[in-house]
Image (cartoon, rainbow, N blue to C red; front, side, top):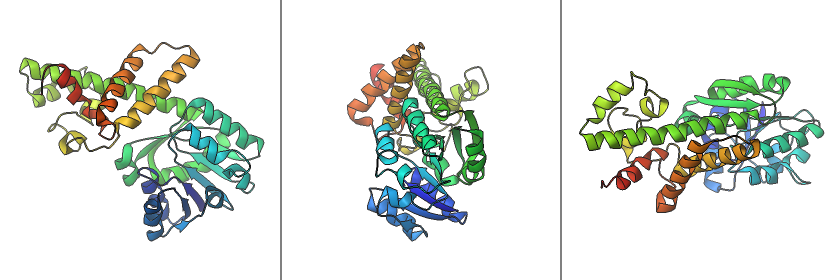
Length: 298
């Protein structure tokens, strides 16, 4: 396929690499020259603008920081919807607010173009390995067109329903993740205070009712899960800044929908305090260090 890929940073870059490895012709655009250069070296083609990346393509994939950038790139007289040929399929893999996702999808539909919101879970490691989970919102027809392409970049592809439902699934999932990570961190700090060994707690909870992904796949203390960031001084797989963004999106959605989410609100407040203390680039599991500090531990 002829694919345009806009936003080839930490996540988008490896995703575009996997498309190139699968034999697709990928034209890329990003504000960071080094990110574009890496894709060109792998066989991609540099585009001078987002509109140029979208013109005459079968599929256009975007991976952008927030809803504001998605609006800027997609909408308006110089936006990629206006530049696209008839029949182009757009797949936005950004994590943004549900309202923006539905607004842009409606604009695409009005222009006679197909669009999916398809945020991902799995971090940079999953992007590189091609094992991402895609949560996809949009029409059945658009999903059917995109499924094989998404399988080139991911392992689990789930159609969550209509436009915006991919974003809804992502922010609900990450609210669970943010809350559960704090609970796991608190349990390990309490265990430390009580003289319970990290590995012993892990061995028990991993096979008991405390089992969860934050414990068994992403343990916030070194040792029990060798691949977790805790073993690399919390080098980010999923940064604090990104977790805070998702928790705030969940709170905005909860307010709009009239849903109570007090644990999500508390998690957002804790991650905000941690980020403001200079930890925004660290892995989100590093919040255990703040919990230790608040518990009187170094």
